[in-house]
Every structure is written in structure tokens, then in C-alpha cells.
Image: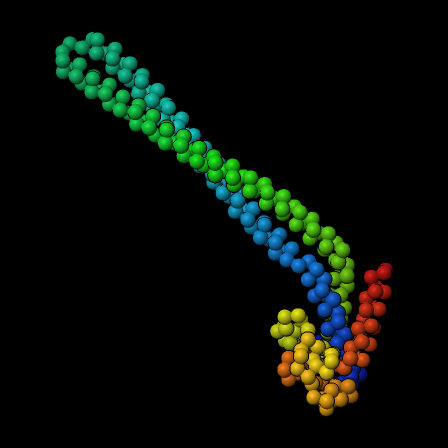
Length: 264
């Protein structure tokens, strides 16, 4: 809640306080605009890198699993060959055709197991080759995105370093200025500012129109604004209006105050 001033404020006092706050907040907006889309670009790159890292890990683990499967099938082939050798040795010692035929069937079964294992090994190797190609592309893209992120972070850090002191000072001044504005007006200011794309809630008359608007303000209303006897809201833009002289005076005062502080 904004604190009330120790003395009764005139409409002009209120207008000056509102416009001074607008000048400060606009300076903050300008600093954040200078940063542009960099924070979002950094965030997007970090998300993309996280996704690519997960993909690389998944592909790598998948290849390891396939290599394990190949090793298992190679062991099966080795075992099958040993069994064939064993059965062939037993065939030379059989006493009848039935035992010989039985051993022949076992040998045939082991040969089929070898063929199946060899087929599976070929399939696994083809899968590994495919994953390897995808992995190389993903790894290359990951490294590229990491370089992009490093550049973007460097740019952002440089801009933040240049403007950090000013932004902190302006933010403190903005909060201080808010305390000198009555709650009703401050609430209206924030509502109007939040609805405006350029963040302007208090604007001077420019070429007989509201700042940023092309709709002319009636002469009598212009005179009322210049008189500073009451707070007037533009019926078209919804913004609070001040005269050009007041705007120039407050802008100069605030800019001098900012410049003096930043020289310290």
C-alpha cells in the first residue's frame, strides 16, 4: 500500500509524481528492451540442449544394449558349436541308428540356433549403424547449440553488466516514487501501464493529441490539462494526460537525478 504524503497534494503535485514515476519506469523498460529476446533465446537454447543431451544419452545406451545383445548371441554361437562338436563325438560311439538319429537332430537344432543367432547379430549391427548415424548428427547439433549458448550468454552477461547498476537504482527509485502516490492513483497507473504495449500510462499532449495517438484533443480539454487543476484521462487511449511543459520539466529533473547517481 502506498503511503500518503505528509502534506496535502495538489492535482499538479499528483500529476508531477505520476509523470516522474512514468519517466523512471520507462527507463527501466528501455533497459529491458535493450536486452531484447536474449533471455528467451538463452532459455530456448538451454531447453534444446537438454533435449539433445537426453537424445544422445538414449542413443548411446541403446547402442550399448545392442552390443550386449551381439555379445550374448556370439556366446550362444560358441556354445552351440561346442555342443555340435560334442554330439559329433558321441555319434562315433553310438550302438544303434536311433541314438545316431537323435544326436543328428540335436546337431541340426544347434545349427539352426547358430543361423538364428547370426541373423540376429546382423540385425543388431544394422541397428547400431543406424543409431550411430543419428548419434553423430545429434552430437554435432548438440555441440553447435552449446557454442550458440555460450555466445548468447556472453552477450547477455555483457548487457546485464552494463545496465545492472542503473536498473537496480531505477527500480529502487520507482518503488520510492510509488510511496508518494496515493493508492487509488497508483492502482490506476499500474492498470493502465499493464494494458499498454509500450508501458505508457501517463503521456503529454503532442501536436494536440495524446502521446502516441493521432486523435486530437478538444481545445477546452487541452486548456484544462494545462491548468493542472484535475487529473484528466484521455477518453480514447485511457491514459492520464499532462501538458508538454510539465512533462519536459519532470523529465529533465528525473534525468539529472539519474545522471548524478550513476556518476558515483
